Amino acid sequence: MEISIVIPVCEAQKSIGKVIDELQALPYLQQNQWELILVDDFSSDKSFEIIQAKAKEYPNIIGITLHKNAGQHAATFVGIREAKGKYLLTMDDDGEHPVSQIAPMIQKLEENKVDVVYASPTKREKSRFRKVVSKGFKISARMFSDGYGDGSAFRLIHRSVYSQIQKLKTPFVFIDEILAWYTKNVYFF
Image (tube, rainbow, N blue to C red; front, side, top):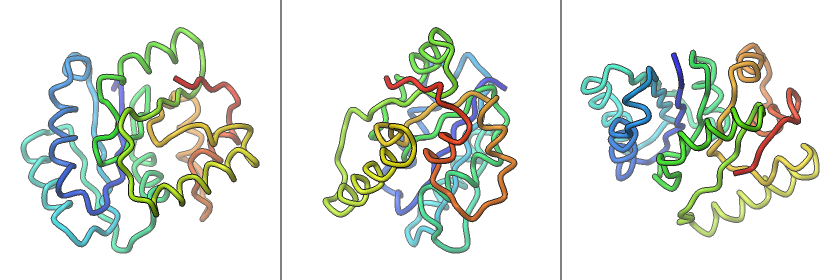
């Protein structure tokens, strides 16, 4: 399998169907074997129903639902544990990460011989609360993880690194900090 894409989903009934369809229509993905792992983080809307319907439409979708809200990083971690691809891509459920950047991210990872590529979203339409929380996480990540706070949830990870993360048995789940435990070989795109 070439690529595993993990998306934590929470209260995304308005966007997740569109994100799934954009991924399925992407020429790069159509030319490769890939899987889409969608982890519903205890949404109270119809997010998981949409995931289930899309899983019937597209056989490469794996839908997982959590029985309590665990947060974005914990839900992402659940998806990482299921991944099988040579590459693992994580992204948000709101469509702010341009799927057209997936192939260039893989190209940058290979060209620069790095373990992780972070890309910045092109659209930033988060609520004020989410912006404040995100900024706090980024500041703490910069302090404790050698600059990883400059990244985003739009990240590509080589199997040699994420396979180590899959083995973790820890209640601590902050993906960027965990990545910093295993590699300093990172590229910001």
